[in-house]
Length: 143
Image (cartoon, rainbow, N blue to C red; front, side):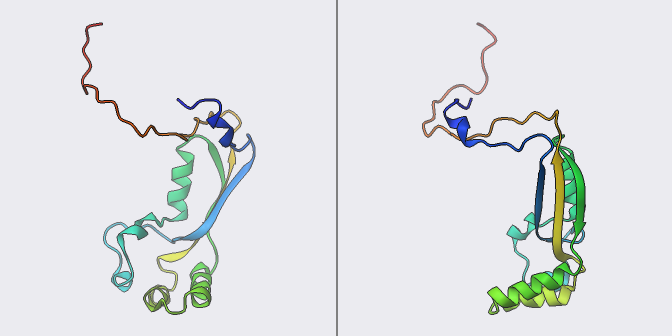
């Protein structure tokens, strides 16, 4: 349970307010292995990239948001490439992957939702005890 003093750090969005994300993502989900042209660049941490459709489902199933927009940005792969050339021109592996992909899988995703008025938000976990008290996993039915 979160105590009242700690909950002051929690500032949930007000009912009706908008929340949005935009950034690198997938034009469509990769169902199995990454395509060959992404193989040299793809690492296990890149499975965090998802499509607009994935983000829509993810947000909708919480029951907290009404999704107003979930799509990919036009020429998002080109924007990603331009950004990379500006900030990390030596990262040839990623640049080559984006160039080879040309928006087939890689692009920019954006999602905008509005907080439902009746949705109840749980208090965030802001404290985790650092000490562990050992107790039996199975509790006795005797009281």
